[in-house]
Length: 335
Image 1 (cartoon, helix red, strand yellow):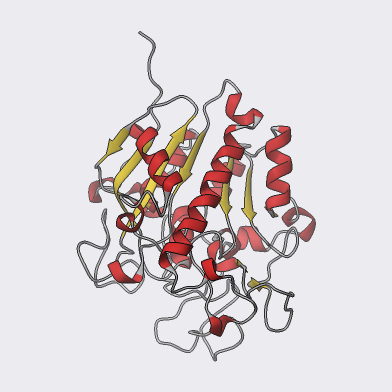
Image 2: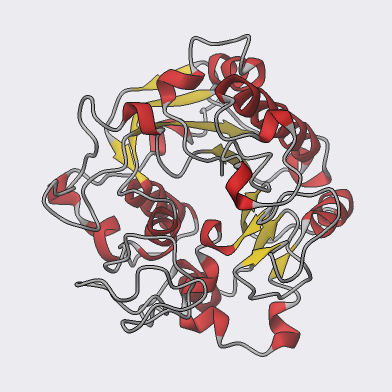
């Protein structure tokens, strides 16, 4: 998962994003993929739960309606909802099928950590910007069925990139994973007001630098996955590269959502058009799919791929245009 860039900021800029442009040309690209809302957090929740559950801010999972507090900056506003979600999630569905999952978060301060961000003003790190790791870009931690687990379990589920390297090298990846680089490497960026030491190509205002840095990280991760035993195994594997929402400059033009979005909803008004590409170890290649999709469509596709008949929330809104992204995952038949 990458952050805050629209498809038009990536495609057609091979000097900014050479890896993403190359991968889009070689593999599968969803040309009309939309996010659900701004800002980030609820899009990750939507991908895992089939709904934003009323969340439309980046406050921490433990926040509830009431006075403001640390990491709960919007909790005193009208319509604010409990961010600790009790609904079923993809993680519950996978568990019911005996399938495994992990969240790989770069610079998480330790396996199983539930802290909202690191480094922070109270726990700074020398020569690093604050909030390199941000739980608002996880989604997993917002579900009570995850955050209420014993720490001994969380240590094997919420892990860092050192564990990703080890799991890829040994071929012991889970059935499903979301891989999220830190805020410098996912194109989000950090500002001077955030504190700490911010590299030039991580500065929020350096659009080309942020995209180029994030593109290099995507290229590195895809290469790493493709070199792993998981990729060369006979089973079907896929890498999806997507974003949470589009960029600020693109929020005022054109359709902002698809597939049941409501411009009048505070938590489902559309997060803009974003790049989403699909790379599989079995094809198809050079595929451009113009079907309108969103994060609910991707959730539905994941459910279908794992043989899960239940479609959570809006992932089941077939009548509103939420359909599987199967053309981008299809296994070619031999002739």
